[in-house]
Length: 190
Image (tube, rainbow, N blue to C red; front, side, top):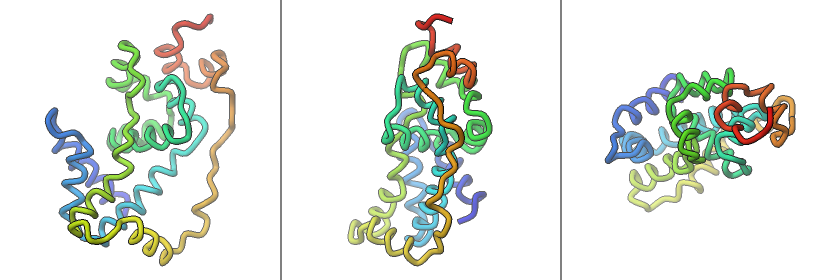
């Protein structure tokens, strides 16, 4: 699955989501209209897009927004970036501090909500759709392991995370992420 098709699926789900139908439900519905092979190709692209923002600067943004951020939470944050759609994903990938301009992030900072952007269920949308497509008769993860083993995945395990830095240093966070720090580091001396 190419990048355009991947983002077309994401945008279709975003368009179909409502107050009564969360994004992840719309995404599973959208994916469930596709074949098993399409779902595996979607997951492959999802992993690439998800992995592309596995960087220290993006993690620092998640750390500020979430009031801390474990490894597992960072997975959920990256899934949440994807759920924001291509435009916001690409903005955050280019400059994580741009998330300080996202309405949900601003609203979350005002209400001390540490859930903004974190969206765990998006990580499992393909498996939910796969279960629907197969009637639960096939295991997504078995099919994924078989599919992944058949693909050339050389070079995909090496990740360039960029420069590591201390997320607990408020001055460093203000220097690297001034917009997010202005929203989230209100109690620390300047």
